[in-house]
Image (cartoon, rainbow, N blue to C red):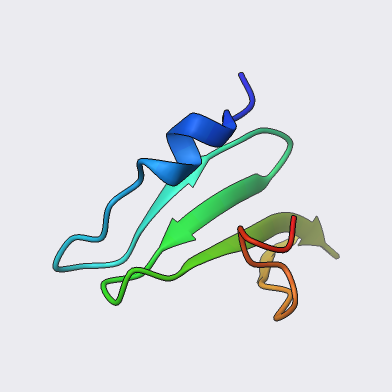
Amino acid sequence: MPLSDMAIRHARPTDKNYTIGDFDGLSLMVTAAGKKRWLFRFYWEGQQTEKCPSAATQQSV
């Protein structure tokens, strides 16, 4: 089930970074400083890769 806007807005920072899964390899990382970033996990040549586009913050999406 995709993340709703309400769930993203209510994601609060903790003492460690954590991720909330969305769908199809997309997840939202909430940092200890309170920033929210989208992560995209995928497989390339048999190895799992994680990309964090620098321009994709929660406010810009």
